Image (cartoon, rainbow, N blue to C red):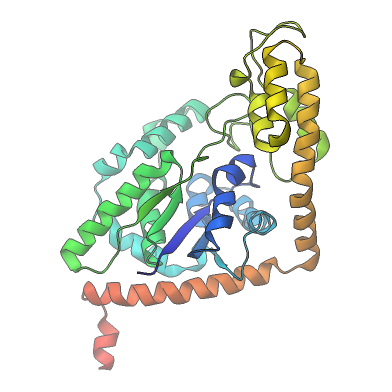
Length: 338
């Protein structure tokens, strides 16, 4: 059976290290083995940014540039814009009849995100929109309209995949065995910590190093990174496992990581010197990505890549929707034409 991957990100800003190590690096490997659809989920981005559409529009291209600079090949993957596939919105409406409001509220991912919104912005339950609460339904439409059956996700996203599987089972029970149940494809680096030690690196949390950050910005961010609070003086022994500087050394300084660890544990490495070394490695790590990104901008080919990818994606979506409408007995004009 053909294996199809569907994944993507919301265009709410440039990608950061968490996106690369936690997701995109794995996608680059998967594109060599599977038919892969990469969605720029602008409709889902609007659930949080409905009053700032210019932000979403601008970042569609920014995210596409980041994807390409990181190694996603438009000859191997289909990169498309969610809002330009009307079949997704149509299928979302059909699926909305198969999910109760109570079930959406019980989704662990939704519960966590609601809690985060309250902590960050002071939102209460009354301010939650239908679009936000229902985005797992939209995500199920994303996956199934392309017949996706392998979905690369982090552990925090597993409840969304289970929600999709429930919708597929209910749809198939009512309308016939049309859709495939997707399976989660977990990446071992599913979540990258923030500079502040938070379990998640996030745009809104202010703890991220972005792929477009210049050396000065990288330097400022790393110099403020959380270290072992028990290390007071330069020659104090420390625990590298609680230090975010060591954590990022492991990501971009693999060749020297054992030395960094031993010197930290033995009190032979000061935090300032360790941070400065990390800055050098981080800038060097980001340099080829940023050079590739600049080259793509100068070539002015991103718009064409997005257009062609979206057209290809819609062809696939139309095929699926034809089968779905037939099974739901709403293929009226096909019947009339016969």
